[in-house]
Length: 542
Image (cartoon, rainbow, N blue to C red):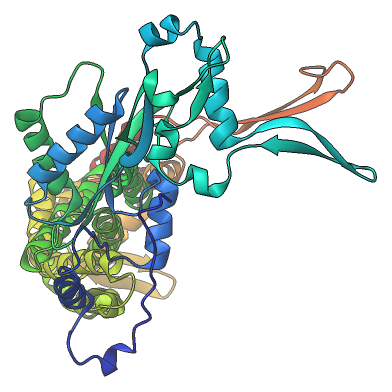
């Protein structure tokens, strides 16, 4: 920490006892206004842990840090002051701090080499006299028992108090003449460096500021535009942006990988759940429907997109997809139970699953509600995440109950084929094949005599005793059994190897486990092929 900086921790009363401010931002504004009367002082308001965390990241206490690199300290100081003047009025920039690296008064001694040569002196002798007079020089040793100390000779305190003492310091010439130092040197006060900071062996100066009431990225974008248009960087000088902005860039890079991976995993799990790419994509439509609500919720609350908001979108997508799974699973169950009318299936399924869908969204929304309205420490992280989840679930629930059934009807009806009942013509053909009379009544011999059958009983008897029908039923059962194993996943391969790999003195044990998966469309096509074989067998029976 430089000599001009210091930390002061202000302990606040419980928030319910505050009388002059309602929240932290208003309190900072009032404290800043009262402290502004102190000249040449810059104040930065932060929380202790946040400040220490910023110091660990960039070496500065502020949220965003600009570092200017170069060689000349005076040029660095001028550049930092120029940049500070130009960016201090940017919206959201608060508590601007420019590091001081120059301005410490120092006594400068500039030797006049011509006069030193005239007196027959040399630079080394003059430097030795100055060092002895003001810094001290060892002239011998002092012993105290087994301890030993250097005997240092220098001027007393009264002769080392002012610049005139330096000017009047006498130095000896080779002839033994004593002359004041001012005869052979120009002595004056000049500003020198206060501190020299380096990163990666390069000198640098920092500018820092805190961010309030605006997102970090847009502020840095404005500053970059200003610096690029109004600040001329000399050759060999450049500027970098760190602190929360650097964290944001790194987190965005990680989020750019995590979000697509999460979406891909959701899609794969949907496929393995329903064994259908079409139904998986149908449920996947809940993701853009939920994203709409999340974006609008951030806009309504005037919140910028942040990393916590990005994490909130990932959590939102999982809950939104869950509602779609509940609906589609119910539609499939009704289809298996024989509800062939697709419109009736959707009406029944939506009515039955309305309460579970609403409960799923309500539980998640109410769970995030305290975070959405939080104003305590950490609220800047909690509020965007909870806002995205709650806003997204509102639109996802409403649109899922309307859009998803419509899409289900559209995509299912396009592949739904209506078949006319063929039971009566098929039964008549079978009766003709068996040589039975096509009459309203038929007679079948029994042990007790002759039994008169109706037409429907005759058809049922014919279907029961016809070998072709039995063979067709057997083929249908065979194809249905084969469908259960139509999707084939290769066996897991496990291999074990023992031998010397890295260390000649040790036998290494290597176990390899390999599992191969084909592209998801391969499995879907295998399932479709098995389904078509079942349909072919059913057509043979008909």
